[in-house]
Length: 134
Image (cartoon, rainbow, N blue to C red; front, side, top):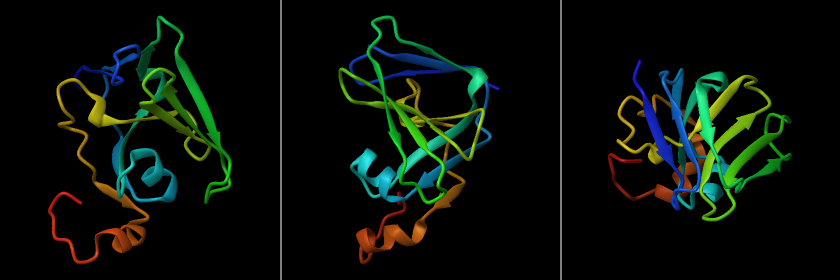
């Protein structure tokens, strides 16, 4: 177990955890592609009681996504100032916080994705391109 801390782009919101993720996921679903502005998004799954979020200026906002494949809502928590998504909670994973490991101050070692979701969706964006990174 190691201490990890991070922040949004503007630094208004900070977060930390002293636990390891149960799993790290690289997701290619429509919501993750749109949120990341990329072909996919990395999320690391932590117990929500092991995650501390500091928002002293009360700038955290949330957006509920209702049209999910599971039928369960997803809530994205993001900085109202810079727009950076800090975490997501999903109805099918109660008690879990999905953090963006790319926001950790010291990189995301230990949060490398081991599971791919909606991998078939990435093909239309990456077909013909060769990269070990996606």
